Image 1 (cartoon, rainbow, N blue to C red):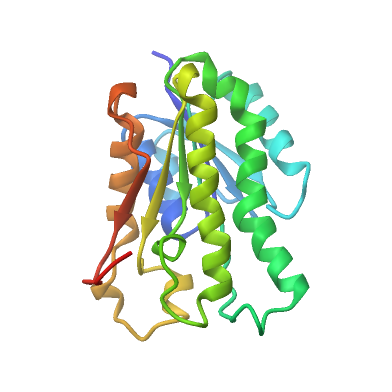
Image 2: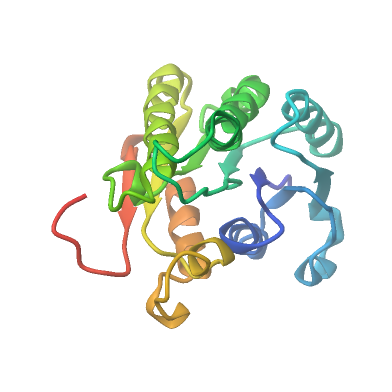
Length: 233
């Protein structure tokens, strides 16, 4: 039986790593985009279903190279989970041009390029799936220091909707997943909230698996996941 194949960026840790393991455990083959590729311990169970690629979101040609390498390995791409991202906690006044450009490049342009590189492959089955890891910061601006990051994540949410429009007739479905605080290195660097009081990466991975498994007729454009009560987002 031929496995479905998912490309996952930011797969070395956090949400990307948890999603990779969850999909692998569900029988998927996974192509893992990592800055420093290393086979995860869980992959030892069936290393033939795991492909590693040295992916740097800042390199314009990396998306095409990765897509081609994954196709050469597995012959198909059924889903793309764009999880790689950075957060620079500065206001739009404080942030430099170079810092803002870097955040937009990694958070917005890199996933756009990945989707473009995988687009034809995603359309083959008529059930291609794209998950854009956005954020609740792409739905509201919670603080001044989150302002610049929010600008990039608002763009990610817009990108997800644009891709949903572009691929709908081909059966490609795109969802913007918008979590609040998730117990990752990034979140723990900007809050004193205890990790146990945050959404766990493994739980978010279960949500992503559910979204990928839904039929075309149950398309979800956005899904918000939060660990705390907020008045609005």
